[in-house]
Image (tube, rainbow, N blue to C red; front, side, top):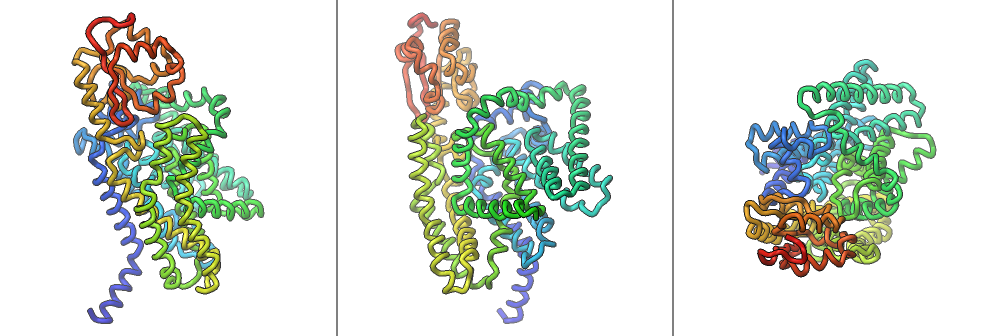
Amino acid sequence: MSVSRQATLRDWARRHILAITLAIAAAFTIGCALRMGWQPLSTDENDFFLAMAYWPEWRKIIPHPHLYVHWAQLLLSIFGATVEAARLSVLIPHLLTLPLLAWLARLLYHNMPGRLNWQTIALVAIGLYALNPLIVQNSVLIDIDNGLLTTALTALLCLWLALRRRSPVMRVFVLSIGFAICLWIKLPTPPMLAAALIAGEIARRNWREAGIAATFTAGGAALFAVLHTVYGWFTGYTLADASAALVGRSSGVGEALSQAPNHFIQTSGVMVFWLGLPIALLGLLTFWDSAQRWARRQINDTDIALLYVVGVFAFYGTMIVPAWGYPRYHTPALPVLMVIIAAWVSRQIRQPGCVLSRIALPIMLGGTLYMLFIVGDPMYDIYRATFETTVLAERLRIGGLAMARLALPMALVIGLGFTLAHRVRMTRTALLAGGLAALTLGSYLATDLVQVTAEYSTRYRYTYRYADRAQATAAVRTNVPPGGYSLTDKDLLWYAGRPGDQIYPYLGNPDLLKTTLRARRVDVIAWAQKERLKATALNADAEALAILEQCYRSQRFGVFTVLTRAGPTPCLGIQ
């Protein structure tokens, strides 16, 4: 190839680097989704599929506004009522979020002072976001937060920034509609973005902007309430139905607050494993940088966006997600967080790219190899601990050991940053920022490879093997006749296709279990080990335990236990 042709290609690549990066990120996302497409639905995904496919009968099983459900129904009507079509309801918004990252980077940083290049920020943010294991898993998880809600809230923030020079009337009109659409997807999270905008503008004494934010929030909420009331008249799915989850959570606020410190520690630990230690450290440095600007009253749009991230993480970390949960609720804040971290990294690196590349590429490769051959799945141990013990100290021990393995490469990168900076004529902060970003990308790539090819669940009910679930399902189907009855785990109840009820309330109420067993023949009782460990009331009821031991035969399939009724005659007073 001639020198001139090579120069032409390099020039073309520079001009189209953002589009090329977006295409690669989209291809990576689609490839991962296709590779995981064989995996069956789990737990709440089954509820969503029921609501999508049989809306008149099962609509109230999803106690949220149903724009996401109707969006998925549109796809089911086009492609058929299949799991693959339902998963498009999260994959498509996920792909749309990728260009929104670039738009958000441009809106936040194209006029920033200094040597910040918004396109560089966008490239880094797209890489961090697309490779993040949580995002990769979200691309096939049928749920509200990780798909349509993430895209809608990111777009709403972009609109807020993009319409700055428009008239207040137009801004309020457009943003009210946008806010109402977000509320039609889910109620709790959109107000967090609105509250951050209002609080941030008040903090920097920008009363006009604060007023516009408050007005579109009120207008959008009113628009949503009116339209959903009319919608309820025609469909029967009322505003009260759409608010059921929020009202239910509100009724337990006192108990949630009493457990908030414990929940926050556990949930934050889970999120650190999902985000990774290197980017968690970058996030802390970003927060510190922002906190200094808040203290000096030099608040900018980045700080307000970061306030939204803090609100989402604080609320869902303390009020809802326990340690064994899959942290999908945090996802709407991740696009914003990745853009802000990418900007901080880009701000620190002011040296020529060739110097950094010679250091970053080996770090990225080393991180990939270390995660692949030493760590494996960084989430496995911490989630597996929830099936093996209910003792917090033991969980912390297991999590601490897992964290120590993850901390080793980060400690090496930090050490290199302090010892090599002067030799390559880079500041320690610049070398640290570049090294941690490179280590993050390498760790993400390795974790994705492990998780995407795993034979066990990497989302709901993390670590259980799908083969074990298939065997447990077959055992339920074999031992429960078409006219029989079972009390089982939600997944087994769904896939076995036999009459029955979910086991969860019975594990917490042994009297209810005994009453049910005396009233009718229950052919099979099944649970996952996690539920059994948490069943303190059942574990303390000697009569119930005796019935289960003497009247049922036990089979174990991984984390699943299947109890089948022994004999046709009554046993210890049960049918």
